Length: 56
Image 1: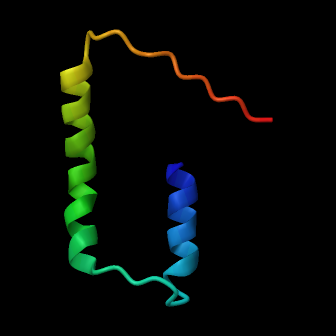
Image 2 (image 1 turned 45 degrees about the vertical axis):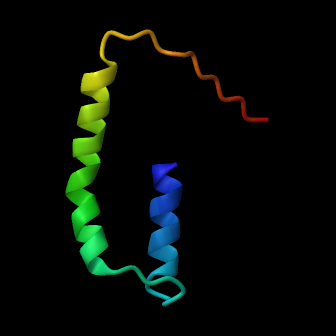
């Protein structure tokens, strides 16, 4: 999903189809590892639901 979103952004941004305030981007870049670290800390040791994706 990350690759799709990243590719879409790289495609649409230079063509001026979408425009994002750079301040939001600069804030979200360091927040991503913080959020995933917090998620990992709070979910460690808990049983995980098995997720299965089937592509046909």
